[in-house]
Length: 335
Ligand code: SAM
Ligand code: SF4
Image (cartoon, rainbow, N blue to C red):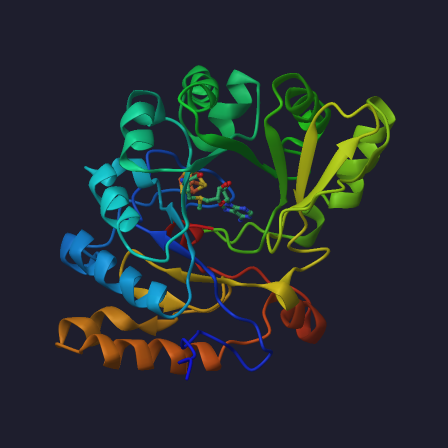
């Protein structure tokens, strides 16, 4: 008789396949749509999961059907020896791919070692090609470094994509330039709608520059885009290509076209909370249970039980009471 593998399934029949692990809340940038402006209060080191704890939990998640891992932050590359963590995750049976989301500031020097530690792909975040604006959005200088990181990622053989959050009045006038970047480099640029998860509570619905508005601008300046024939399965990014076949764009319309019904993602925060949804707060304190000596089986049961209570997501928040900014601190969750 074949024994069915247990999985993480919720009451809407969604099964978790992708785990995003935030390895630190610390960051070397202060993006206005993410981080509290004067954040100097990071989690205490003892609050943050150790690599051993992350690896143990990841093995349990893998036993429960998780196949893909994304390492995120804060800025994951400010945590020392992240390559060691990637190498250990690589050794876990059933984990098919490991990706990293980074702001690119520290990536250049680490590109080779990350690739050889077993990293498959990298998403690099960039919201402006203008030096002054880059500084205004992120709070630091370093545009050249980030652009060099993008090219370096490609050179060392990583699958690379760009993440671009578009905020009305901040950078919506650069959407066409980003689309042209995708056409010239062959790198997929994924445009992300501004979500109500910023650290200072600045989110307002009129700051959301929608997917439809982005497409309108791109079509006016460059030409028609159509949904790509090959879509990446189970990702919130809807892929579009140009009729001349040059360049692919992704759109993540989390606000105007929520992806909740197909969501297969779960999250582990750096301070050891299990989030079944990006909008869940505070989530389930799996770290305390683990540190009290819970066995793998007890931890697995706790994860299964938490997952069964996963809420519908942002789609229902919009339906029930419209969207309100939530101080859910994106840098502690990792996007
Ligand atoms: N520091 C890394 C980086 O910036 O890529 C990883 C963590 S960051 C929280 C992950 C992704 O979330 C980034 O691409 C960032 O642009 C995006 N992000 C942060 N706050 C957001 C918000 N309020 N709405 C939409 N995307 C956001
Ligand atoms: Fe840091 Fe990334 Fe948040 Fe920017 S988006 S503040 S780089 S965690």
